[in-house]
Amino acid sequence: MDEFNSETDSEYSNYWRDWFISSRGNEYFCEIDEDYLTDRFNLTGLNTEVQYYQYALDLVTDVFDLDCDDDMREQIEKSARHLYGLVHARYIVTTRGLSKMLDKFKKGEFGKCPRVVCQSHPLLPMGQHDSPNISAVKLYCAKCEDLYNPKSSRHAAIDGAYFGTSFHSILFQVYPAMLPPKSSARYEPRVFGFKVHAAAALARWQEVKKEDMLLRLKDLAVETGFEEEEAEEMTDEEMSEIEDDTKLIEDGLVGAAR
Ligand SMILES: [Zn+2]
Image (cartoon, rainbow, N blue to C red; front, side):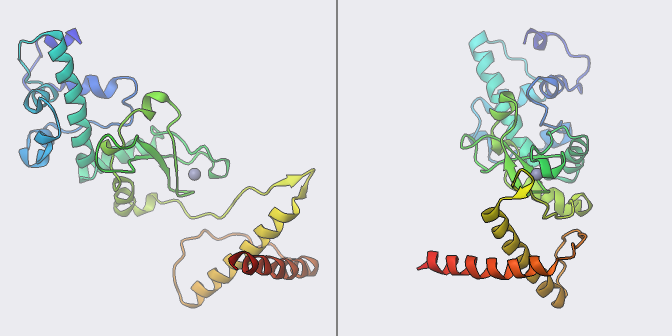
């Protein structure tokens, strides 16, 4: 921390931000432009959210020159990190911020989906709340459309509000080509190579319902976004099994609903 007391090379050096971005555990953050940080409009409302707001902002923009003791310094440092996070959530939905985060996404800097069937699809950080101190950052996989906890405890402690609830959706709206084709590939439980009957019966029934839905959508000329799959030819035996299963499962569902 002592480095901060040393003279900065020029008025425009981004010393604090460089340090923050390169610190271990802060890999999910991108660097907020000086222009963005110095435009008061972008910081609207944050003065009530952050303690020692002005000192924190001075620290983030490298114009901090208050002579204070270590405790105070630490408080201001903490506030600066909080302020940076809150501005970050706003910055990453701007054109410039989106493009910086896209680069990190492409390099897989937010990690890869742990689900085997997703084949290491890159993740995006997101929050489940836009207000701070409610929940930690989660990682979103666009392939399975699910959320995961970060692997490292350093990342798991970051506030989700520093990324926000909308960022990942906005990114895919702005860069639709980044959306992976939808896949219905999934794991099939087997015992010594044979499909587990109950699970297989349910899976077959779901498969038939999905096919029905896709055909209906096709008739209505609705674009589903599912990738083309090689349809497997079904044998007569399988067809009759499905009919039996459908009967059983539908009876079961009706029974359960009663
Ligand atoms: Zn996934």
